[in-house]
Length: 436
Image 1 (cartoon, rainbow, N blue to C red):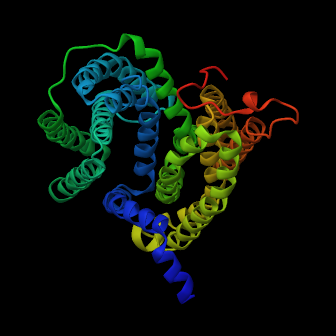
Image 2 (cartoon, rainbow, N blue to C red; image 1 turned 180 degrees about the vertical axis):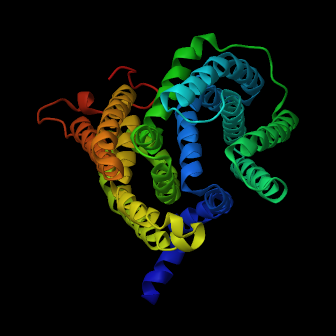
C-alpha cells in the first residue's frame, strides 16, 4: 500500500488532478453550504418549487446569448485583440435573446408547471438567475480565453460567496426564508455580482465594442444546442417530476440529485486533463485516438466509481445535515450515484469523435439523446414517479454511451488491407475536412 501511495504521489497526472480539484472544491463547498441552508429553511415542498423553477432556468439559460461566450473564447484564443468586439457582441446578444426567453420561462413556470407563485415573483427570480448565471459564466470564459485559469476560479468562487452571503442575510434579517424573499435577495446579489465582475473584466481585458458577429451566429447556436443537450438529463428530471408529483417529493429528489452533481466535478476535471491530448492523437491518426480512448477508459471509470462510492457514503449524512424530513433523499442519491461510470464513458467517446473531426456526428448524437432523454424522463415520471425518473435517467445515459462508443469504434476502425498508405495517412486538424 505504501509503495502504491508513493507511486501515485510521483505521478504527474495525479498531482495535476489534485491541484485542479482543490480550487474547484472550495467553490463547491460554498455551494453545498448554500444548498444546505436552502434545504433546512425552505423544507421539501418549497425546495421542490424552487428546484423546478431553477431547472427550467437551467435549460433556458443556455440559449440566452446563442453561445456568445463560446464564440468569445474561440475568437479570443485566436487573437486577444478580438475580445472587446466579442464582449460587445455578448452584451447585445444577452439583451436581445434574454427578454423573449425570460417571457417564455415565466409562462412555462406559472402555467405549464402550475407553480403557485405570483408572476412578478417568478419574473424577478428568473431574470435574476439568468443575469447571474450568464454573466458569471461569461466572466469565467473571458478569463479562460486569456489563459488566466486561476482568475476564472476566482470568479467562480466570488459568485458562490456572494450567493451564500445573500442567503445568510435573508435568514438573519428576513426570517423565515421564503421563495418571495429570496427572489428579492437574488436580484440584489445578482446585480452586485454583475457590477463586480464586469468592472474587473473591463479593467483587465478592455471595454466592449458595439459589434455583432453576424458570420458566427450559426456557430453560436450550435454551441448553445450542444450545451443544452449535455445538461438536459440533469435538469429535465425535476421538471418532469414536478408535473406529476407533489412538490415535497420533488424537493426530496432534488436534495438527492444534488450530490450527483457534486460527484460530476472530479469526472469533469479528469476529462479536461485528457481532452487536449485527444486532439494531438487526432493529428497522428484515428488508430491513435482509438488506442488513447481505451487507455483512458480504466482511469476514468476509476474516478467515476470513486465519486459514486463517495456519494453513497456522504448520502448517509443527509438526515443529519438537512434534517429528518430529507431522510428519503439518501436512497435517491445512492441510486443515482452509480450512473457516473456511464457518464464517464460518454465523455471519452464524445471527445474521441471531436478529435477525428466528427463534430457533426457528436452534436447529432447529443441532440438525439436529449430528445430521447426527454421522452424517457416524461414517461418515467408519469408511470413510476421517482423510481421511474431514476430508471429513465439510467436508460438515457446507457443509450447515449452505447451510441457514442459504437460511432467511435466504427470511425476509428483499422483501415482495410490493401488501401494505399497515402489514403490511410491521417489528416492534420487544419486539413481535416469539415464534413463527416
